[in-house]
Each structure stands twice: as structure tokens, then as C-alpha cells.
Image 1: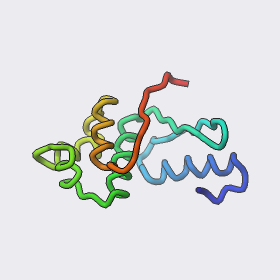
Image 2: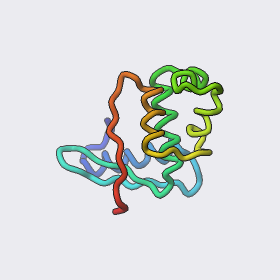
Image 3: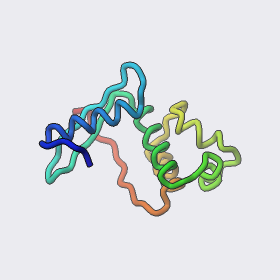
Image 4: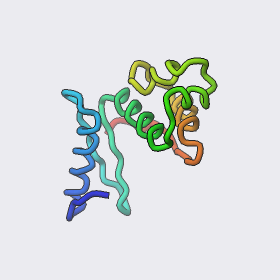
Length: 116
């Protein structure tokens, strides 16, 4: 939800939110409007996008890094944290496992799309 008065303003605010949350020089996102109010967000920096997604999902679930790692079945919180810090880029299958560990009450549909 944004304060944008038009769809264009709202989508600009989505871009601003992502770039503010990441707060890294050179990081940028593009919003691709879809049908019925939907949109997709893309970036050439996939590692950072995945990192942000995992961090936000874990925080919204109220989990610590250690709890997320435990749910993942890892022996150390560092096994999970390396993905959240962007040190490792998970495969789609691994990302699915990571998201299930931090968001048990949510369903996610993951997929890769070709560059636009």
C-alpha cells in the first residue's frame, strides 16, 4: 500500500521502498506493471533481491537467525545467514526450502523468468 494517487505514483513508491531498504550504492529495481493491479519487481542484482526477501520474511515471522537455521535443519545459524547476507545465491529449490523455513504459514510460487 502506498500514498500514490495514481498507479504510476504508487509504482514509483514501490521502487523507492526497495532502493531505500537495500541502501547500497548502484542498486536499482524496475517495476513491471501487470494486470488487475499486480506488478513484478526485477533487478540485475539477484543476490540482493533474494537477501532482502529472506531477511524480510524472517523478520515478519519473528524469528532469529538461529531459529531460522534450526527450522532449516542446519547445525549453525551461519548456514542460513549466508543467504540472508547475500554471500550465497540459492537455487530455486533451495530458496523454496529457505522460504518454507521462515514462512511456514505462507505459500510462495517461485519461478524464473527470462529477462525483459
